[in-house]
Image 1 (cartoon, rainbow, N blue to C red):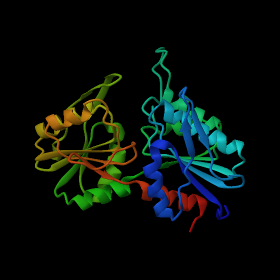
Image 2: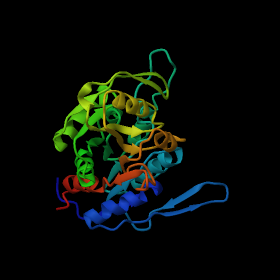
Image 3: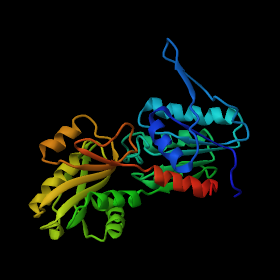
Length: 306
């Protein structure tokens, strides 16, 4: 692929901060969309410059229905105005845990159906970060190039910067244990996994944990914290297995409802995570690291910027 010369970087409204971070890494400007809302609630978008013949990069989340529709509109608008290529990075993909339906349930696997809607808008390339399941990447007929970006490198850097000693990484279930193992390899520390069973949409049971946590500072790792239910159970299992202290870590800090309060009540005073979910910044509970370098490195590679 030839080096791209005329690149236009834009952002969905909820990803403006992320796009700014990526732009700094790439030494590119962010081109702000013209956006206004009409009295009846309809949303107006316009590209502020001619994008015909340009390689357009869209950084956007799909954390809710409005953000999902906005991304589809941006892709379709880019096609309408003859962008040379349309390249999308989705730091946080909404409905990503709904990648399959139970037999005879009548459930709609919205992780698949909504990602398929994005693909049908005809982007050339879509990158996702720390997906719950890679199955959503294949919800197209082969005409879209997809990429799954892992963020262990910046997560490991964050843990090192915080200066923790004698740590063990814990996965709340065996399904996530391979990724926890990769992170543990970067940190040169042990890891283990609990046994988790799901019995309802937001309800899980976490079984016993191995003695690998005994006498250590445990960091429970997962791809996202939504309500925190399984993580909170894993906190109890860690202490029962002899952990000295427990922290939690996840890429996507959704923290729905009263999740923050539930962690604080459990005695958790440190939640480590990325800035993929909109408006997540460090505070007295959260220690947030940026994934902008991961996105920038991928765009440099794919667009051959350097």
